[in-house]
Length: 108
Image (cartoon, rainbow, N blue to C red; front, side, top):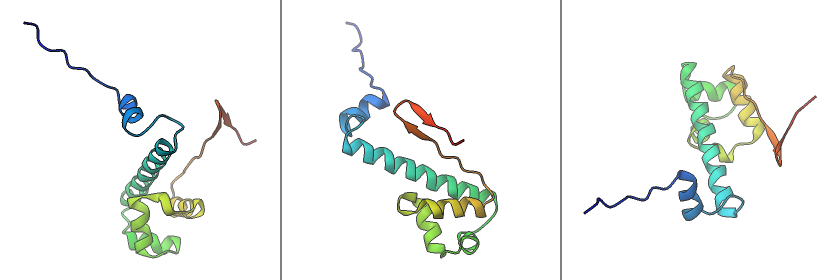
């Protein structure tokens, strides 16, 4: 008797099945939250690399320690201005890409 073959699924297939296809509201919300979590982790890593406490970074940015803590756990409630100020205080470069359909928008 031959061993039973196990069916495998890609991450994309699993997301399509359990979260929704690309372009659906649920999938868009999931992808947005994921990006904001990653951004928060990048802020935390950059802060730690600079050997700063959340309180010290907050003072540099002009916000309370609690806001830095919240930002590091998920940046979804932060304004772009706050995120830029945080990275500026960390002396870190951040780049944004804007993509319209299949073309990246370039600033000239």
